[in-house]
Length: 259
Image (cartoon, rainbow, N blue to C red; front, side, top):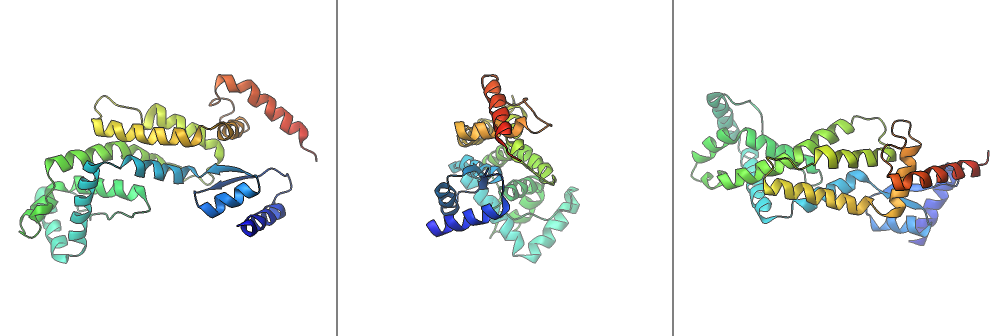
């Protein structure tokens, strides 16, 4: 592992002449150790942390059951051309959009939200096809399953729409983190009057996890400095009690830079 740390240090020295280093990583133990050995600042990848936050919020037996049935439903159509044909017929009869079902990818939380959304959209057509075959009648979603899936989608869909929009940026920098967290708290994951208890639980779980991971003093100082030097944000997302200290630190670091 020391060799890995030395290799990383050599690479950084070739590319970096300022002496300032901050590494954005996932939680891989090897890279975390390499960063630690070199005493560099490490910023956790926001996208990776968001994925883990969402996975953590899904740890509920009701969600496990409903999503499990949902995946079996999608698989039953994926492996049967006859069912796909019958689904198309049912869609025409019910005036439903002629959309195919979407499979979940275990490594992409957004694919789960898209799978659920499509199943809910096509629920009547799906039920008609499954109920016509005694081998698949047990896969017809119950009202309890539908309620759970709707609750999950209500929590995740705004996140999905936001991350899809953010992925269109050419460069998503560290200065985005605090504005995004603020947006999550104030809007995207804010509790709504019509949220079910399950939707509320998912939102709170995601926010609590992200707050825990990005609220330590070292990370907070780094995020404040990044926001301060970004002309789009400046001091907007810096807490009042940290503002003067952050400004002084910025001035001190600029004065210390030698040409």
